[in-house]
Length: 368
Image 1 (cartoon, rainbow, N blue to C red):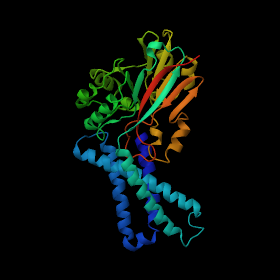
Image 2: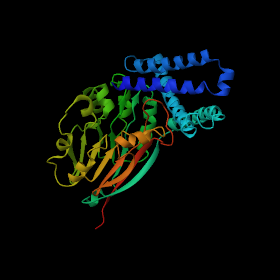
Image 3: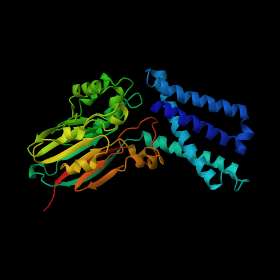
Image 4: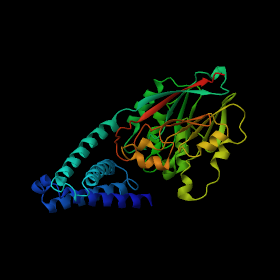
């Protein structure tokens, strides 16, 4: 269903962009209408086939087509935004009719510049975002504990073992006491990528490496992804908790958006938090929903991802309507929530004004 919606929306975007481009004086002069229409149909076919192939085939050609098709989707989105801004300013050409076509040409040029910037930002290494989180009840022995958190690495055809090896080195240089992976770790065609295991095994920390599943692990097979992660020495928390040290509990749940796709799934949060011993609880949830319930259950720190910070501005304005805890740090009834923009990218290798990030969180005993 998501694929049908995405292809339908992109079809409408193609029609809008190429219809508007046909009115630009420079385009009309240098590119006959039949060639413009042919270009539009060709790019639509590239995108549509890339979406189909990415779910059914792997290999160099399918990967290349996916890279081009997903990148084109982002460029198309930026052109729609730029052209729509001009149309709104000019009343869709009824105002300033003499300059409106030229302004549309300028909008396409602006979208091209933004696309180049998005590629540059999307292929850069994630930045390290540092937080210090005071926690009630944190023991003196745990004061200063460093957690390094990654989310949304989307390892697969576009981000592979070389990119992962760079992220592992980045994490190790932050000297973590604990490493947590907050969902959408894997994004391969079948969810089983054994070549990643040796690289993932290099992630280690005194208090362990922990993970929860995101929506993409469920697309590819939750059990299969769990087995791959656990074979890499990573403990996957599936609606459960464990006490790492006396008074320090880590808890994690499966992706909360699963219920929207497969129907009722039970109360993940209660399973993950019930009957745990007293102490400080760190709660991992790929999606930032249910934060109020987690706070009411006595969680001290909740870590989430999923939103990518919108990934490509201004898409984040739409994402924020579904995920009010969108990115950054929040306080919910004395519980700290940190929502990561994610280390990787989904779809296009592009980010605009929303750089990828790795979180370095220092736990601190709250002063009386």
